[in-house]
Image 1 (cartoon, rainbow, N blue to C red):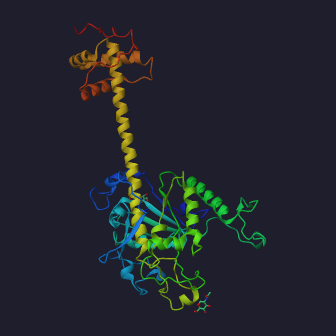
Image 2 (image 1 turned 135 degrees about the vertical axis):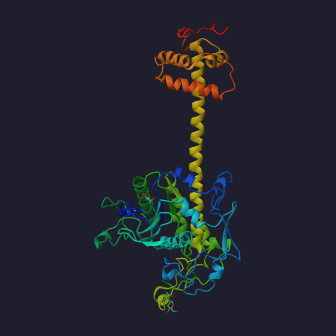
Image 3 (image 1 turned 60 degrees about the horizontal axis):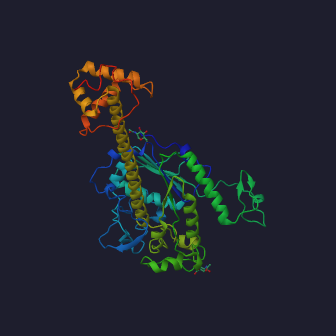
Length: 467
Ligand SMILES: *[C@@H]1O[C@H](CO)[C@@H](O)[C@H](O)[C@H]1NC(C)=O
Ligand SMILES: *[C@@H]1O[C@H](CO)[C@@H](O)[C@H](O)[C@H]1NC(C)=O
C-alpha cells in the first residue's frame, strides 16, 4: 500500500500564507534513473551551461495552443472553473505562452513529471491562492495518470493520489503567517498591530514591514529545522491582484481581454504609483532578501503573472449573486489558465535542481577517482623505494613475480609501511599496485622518496636485482 505524508509533517506551528513546499522521501540522486533520457522533459543537458532566467520574459500569442484539461477535471473548485462558468475569452486566455528571455520552455509533460516524482510526496502549504495553484497542478498531472484519486487526511485540507506512480500531492490550508491568539486585550487601541514573541508583546512595537520580517525569519528558521536538507523547498512569491478602479470591496474590476503591456506593469505595481497591490513587490523584496542563505528556493511567479489582468474569474463565478455579495474576483485565476504556467516553471525548476545535484554527485565521483589514482601512484612510488627499484624496473619485476611472491612483497611492504601510516591490508596494497600497473602506461620515474630508506632489502630486493 502506498504510504501518505504523515499529518505531523504538515502540522505547523508557524504557518506560511504563500509558501509551497515539496517534500521527497528519498535522496535526489536516485532520480537519475527515473527520467527517461531524450524524453521531452529531460532538460538536463540544456542546463546549466546556458543559464537563463525562467521568470523574465514575455507572453506570446499562439492561436493553436490548447489547455491541457477542461471543465470536467474532478479537482476543480466551482468558482475557478471558468469554462463551466462560461467566462468570455477562455480560448484566448489559454492561447498565451510564457517565453523566457534566453531559453526554451517546453510544456510540462505530466507523465514525465510524475515519473520523476515516483514514490515521493509533494506538499503545498498556503491560502486559497496556493489551492488555486494546487487545482491546476492536480488537473495537469491527472493527464499523466487518469486513475488519480481524491485524497484526504486529517490535518491536511485535500489533495490527490496518483496510483500509477505512487505519488501523493497534499495541500495544507494555512491562511496565517504566524500563530496567533485572538483576544481584544491583544489589540490595544493605540497600537492596532502588535507582534508577539514567546507570548510577550515585542517592545518597542514593530511597524508592519519590520514585524513581517521578524515573522518570515522565524518561519524560515522553523522550516529549516523541521524539513531536512533532502527535502526540496520552494517559496512562491506573491500572486498579483488586478482590481481596477477600486479594491476588492470597492467595486474593483478586471474585465480585460488582453494581458497588460510591459510598460503598464510599473503603473499598476510599482509602490511609488500607489496602485492596488502596491505592497506585493515590497513584500517580495523582503522575502527574497530573507530567503538568501537558506535552503529554500524562490519561485518568482509574480512578474509573469503581473501581465495577466485578463485571466481572473472576474464576474464569472458560477453563482448568481456572488458578484453583488463579494465583488469581482481579480485575485484567483481561471483554470485552466495562468497557474498551469506556474506548474510548468515548477517542473523546470525541479529539473534544474536535479541536474545540479547530479553534477555535484558526478563531480564527487570524478574527484574521488582522481584521488584514488593519486594514491595508487604514491603507493607505487613508495613500493619502488621499498624495493630499491626504479618504477620501470619494479614494473618489469612485478610482472615476473608469481602470486605468492607478489603477496610476499605486499606483506613485507605493509609490515614496514604501517609504522608510518594508518595500516593498509596487504590485499589492498596488492590490488592498488595491480590497478596502478593495469591502468597506467606512463612509467616515468615517480618522485623519489626517502621515506623507507632501510627497507629495500627486506624481500631480497635491491637496486641491482634486475640488472
Ligand atoms: C510509495 O511511496 C512511499 C513514499 O512516499 C513509499 O514509502 C512506499 O514504499 C511506496 N510504495 C510502493 C508500493 O512502492
Ligand atoms: C459599487 O457599485 C454599487 C452598484 O453599482 C454601488 O451601489 C456601490 O456604492 C459601489 N460601491 C463603491 C464602494 O463604490
